[in-house]
View 1 (cartoon, rainbow, N blue to C red):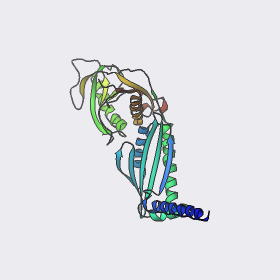
View 2 (view 1 turned 30 degrees about the vertical axis):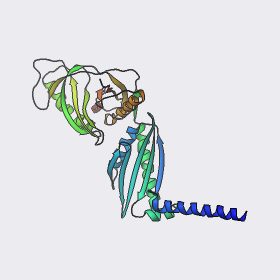
View 3 (view 1 turned 120 degrees about the vertical axis):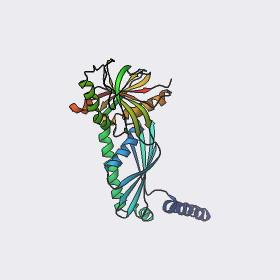
View 4 (view 1 turned 90 degrees about the vertical axis):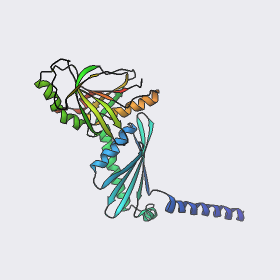
Length: 301
């Protein structure tokens, strides 16, 4: 019995020693936070990036892929590395694990964290609280309803201006060009024939960059103005997955991610070239949750 007790004590000691070696010298992070949100993985991806841009003392180092983002914070002489790991549970729930490491004081943090709250832990908790508040507020400011049936945006002849921007600045690019587009058409008495829309021609998801056409459907005639950036084309609506978005048009791309998740769930192969049809003019203000856009994600033919 005494020998057995010694063996058990020895095994426990070895396991404890191995654990301490791993914890102090191998464990790649100092602090881990797990969170769950009732939204798509795309919304979380964009929320991390927009939150980072809104805060000081940090930079986004890189996105390894859509689900992994690395961020660096500078606090006086300390450098904190954040690794955001985003995992979709389904098309409406996302889990987030945030791995945090103090590059300067990692060993000391691991020693003291089990016993008292350090400055590192306090800063980390403040940041997590702020991010959680930001995401929760954002999720409450828009709605996306994905429809089951395949539909297509209306075909039309349109006047358009080509724009390049980031996803975050998409709406600003539209607002900047709206007076040009609407003014030239009004000055030349061009008759409108539908709601304004954008047609994404290139979406670089790794860089969050866009090329798109900002279009006004019009009645085709022989006296259309031919000047400046204004161009004309036939727009052919394609069979698409459709969602209805309510909220500020700055973040209407949240519906894109919802449609991509829906396509994967239903087994559709889609072209990542969404079309957005707008029902409201943001210049008139009002309750943003009453702003409506129809979002179409074309099915590959």
